[in-house]
Image 1 (spheres, rainbow, N blue to C red):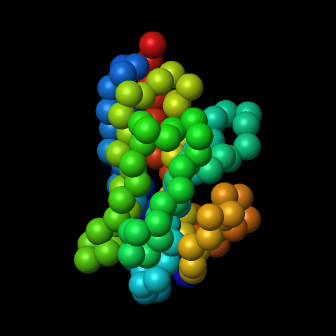
Image 2 (cartoon, rainbow, N blue to C red):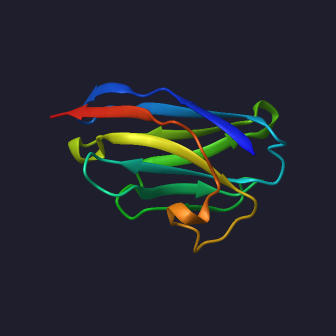
Image 3 (cartoon, one colour):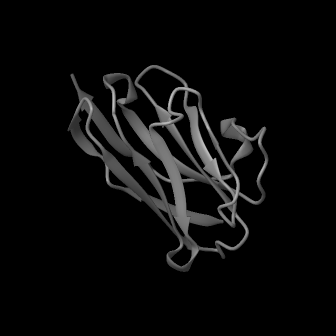
Length: 125
């Protein structure tokens, strides 16, 4: 099992930027695809982005394309989510997740086996 810890959340005004980090430890990080999900109160957790082990493949939800960028530094066992031009509707708890291989179709919560506790992002209007 991979242990995941997110950081970098906070309060930002609409149009601003934040960078989230997710540090992995425990079982080897090698080969794992990493993803970000978010959840608003009273709503289901939704897919945001995912990136393959080598970083050559990535996938984004339509709602964040062109504004969010997922990246990773395998030497640091860390994955990032750079968020730009934030909107109030981006307000949510953001969680990172891991799965053993990349798939363009892997966008469901059940597609990922390891999860962090999440970090709150609040965007004010």
